[in-house]
Image 1 (cartoon, helix red, strand yellow):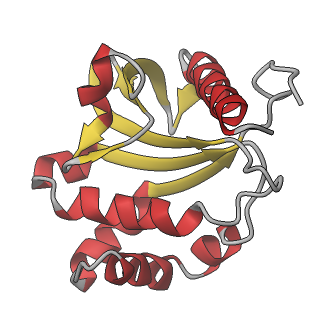
Image 2 (cartoon, helix red, strand yellow; image 1 turned 120 degrees about the vertical axis):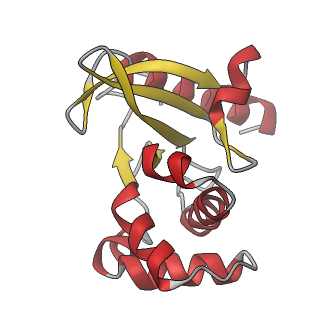
Length: 169
């Protein structure tokens, strides 16, 4: 598949995910569109100097309680997503380390993928170790307190095209 076609599929997947997530309940909050890397709202998809693909406001009782920063990954040319988890964890660590305490408390981070990835199990089984190693790969030294704060804020969801109502292959 030519690179341009692959990028278009990735953008279509991201737009479909954003539509699907808008108005659903995430972590007990209503999700509303906030920022997107492909339009003028891209600054709202940035935290701690790191730009994510999209962000959603998580609203409870008509008040924004948290911001959900997401990376959307369709599959690579080889049909896998083998190389996306490590850069995602590194970016999350950088964003978290560079944020103010209030931003940290209000931020949630999610890797949204069209297919499962092998490294997902490492994050689920060894979250502290995976995040600490991700920070170190990114040249950061997160103390144990920051790692502990970050662990419950890192999520992975597999949203295949049929789940979000898309039918492309």
